[in-house]
Length: 316
Image (cartoon, rainbow, N blue to C red; front, top):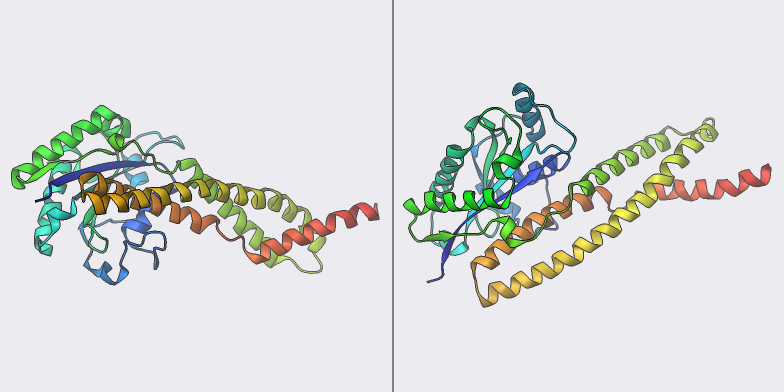
């Protein structure tokens, strides 16, 4: 019989990426091209143990404001706990039994984090292994915003891991302790890339607005404004896409590595890496969605602006 592992992971989110994890967790997208494990035909089987009352970011800002906390642009506003177990644990279990496992895990989180700070706890049954995304605002018992104090260093993460296993093993004695994200040694896509993608998206919207508002009578006036935006947007989008290629290649290698592990071991390491790869692919999918494919209208405008420049010089 293969070993069965209790798995608890944490990830911290600061700004725009909060919306990206929400769209994945709450299944607000129609397609998940970069995450083949999502079977949308089974998404109706997903269920909430804590249903969000509003958007993740809005709820986080509300709680932070009510606590009287000051924030910076780089303040962690949401912490996500990923709770699951190795596939062997879930084999043969009915939905009610799966729900019991995650309810027990939710009870553990509530023992260590104020229930009021929990934004959402949703269980995904439409991927290969059932798992729960539990998102909370990292407010301490005395009302301070401090993800660092709650989950911030390797020692803290190890304590969470130990306590989680100690809690769960009382009800599920066959479970063994899993590993934390810090122990796997792999990082998520830097938040700065999300910020860059959001900024580029806004520029794209500005460019499209100018193009839609341009006519033969105001074309000359709009040209300088359009050029200034294009000079930043086009190279910026290309640079970001180049950076994403590095992650594409790395994740492809990780997926291949994980497939080999599944065939050879079916082990805890394979399970952890699979979950980690899915999380990273989710992030990568969101970034590609924002920066892939410069609209043809913008490419055409860039060509027109480039062609217009020498004409202006010759006229002078």
